[in-house]
Image (cartoon, rainbow, N blue to C red):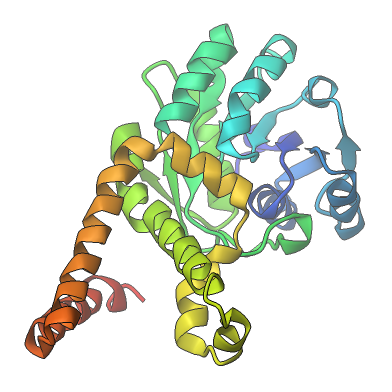
Length: 293
């Protein structure tokens, strides 16, 4: 990274898996001098300090952004409007703001509304990486290595701001992809948000069984693989699903329809129809997923 793009002060608002891993990756790449972490949980900030994820913890977000070069908002998307409103009056003229939200249309609208004249300093982004774990203790610097990073700059976004955010994510090892906000939300509604709903719903359905403890005691890799993401933060995924509900409702309806096809075949004892459903899915998986791996 050229010297002029060096980050002297990075502020991470929400020092979780994503924000913490971003800080660690930039530290490992020697691209940042100081990291200030902001969050609601004192214990999480203390964990971030102990692990060297951040250099200083700050409860006051307004104080934290003073003299910042780059600000990453890694909080749940439902908190972002309030965060933008609070930091807007305190933003230094040259500070660049970006986010890691899993939805983009709502985040961009909130930033445009609350950042006001500072909106051109905002670069919407979304790293396509994660695990089922959360918090500063889950962060690690290789999280973004060879993962896609979606940039969604707006017509007003300053070119210099895009360059800084792009350089930071490249230093983390990410691959940069540009999408429009609506396209982003439609795609990730299908391949990320819907699978989380399915995983949570499946665990809930099994947990309501009269002998749930025994069921889970006999579970194997199939169930664990299917519901791994149900270990993710409920608050974060509540906000994501609510923000993207316009795209998610028809996707959920489509999934319900597929389940109905399977149910009809089971009730009718129609093994051929069930095999056809399974074969179609297996072929699609091989065509689109296995080759990517």
